[in-house]
Length: 281
Image 1 (cartoon, rainbow, N blue to C red):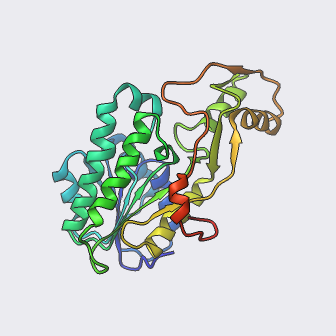
Image 2: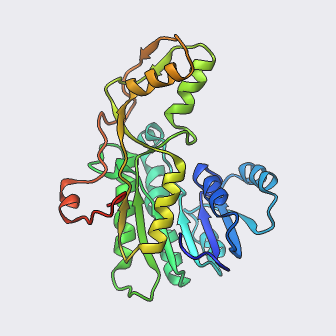
């Protein structure tokens, strides 16, 4: 856990699952202020009411808009860059939108952090950036490249820019587990795209631990990768049926646009030069 005492923290895309869990994790730390930066005023209002914490401030803005990023960045010490377009089919149908948020928006955040002399910025990535076949993975792969490119010319005393990469966060918004549970409770067939499709799964608190580890240990341009077990979508559906003692059928509906059968956490080339840190590369 990095030292957060008297720190001002900015979370882009902070109204999502990551932002909520991060705040739950650090709420008892003696931070100065947390700034939630996002586009959705309604989600911000719900979060404001739920938290009722005067040390949590809300900024409406878009990572695509450099001016709003700069305004939120003033006086910040640490940046968690979680804002992204993450739904694979949406990015596949609207790839330019994915480029504008995941690549150009990330460039805005990193460049603003460097210019404002922020201590450290960590960009949240995905295993879909490894051997990418879809627009979401391609744009997140380029987010990593943008972050690493920004490090060229930066010294140890300048803003530290790093990334983390992990698989599917269990029970996060828009993920498959809440969908399966909803279908089970409604006694509807569980819809799987391909029963043999594999995904790396990890609980949200593990993703938070990875990001905090990166803040504490990152050097310029590092990418931290969380090791995680993989399971097939079919096995996941069966496990949830057993957990809920349900007899609903499992229905195959075919692979969605842009989906991969097997995900990978790191390329062969990356693993050849990676440092094994136990739970992480």
